[in-house]
Image (cartoon, rainbow, N blue to C red):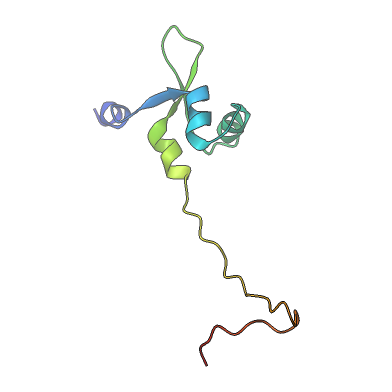
Length: 86
């Protein structure tokens, strides 16, 4: 019964939809994620179409946090600008 409950939470999408979901133009990056075992793939009965769980794709997305960049003093590039705080 546990197997049924875990699989009932699937929201399956095809490779093209998965690629678009992550912002890719082709399915090759999705196929690479499958071959690297970073995501699971599913096949429906009587179908050759490969499907991906959308929730699993969502778990791959990470927030982008840019690194702190120092301001450069255009008059003296070797000396960073002060932020006004002492």
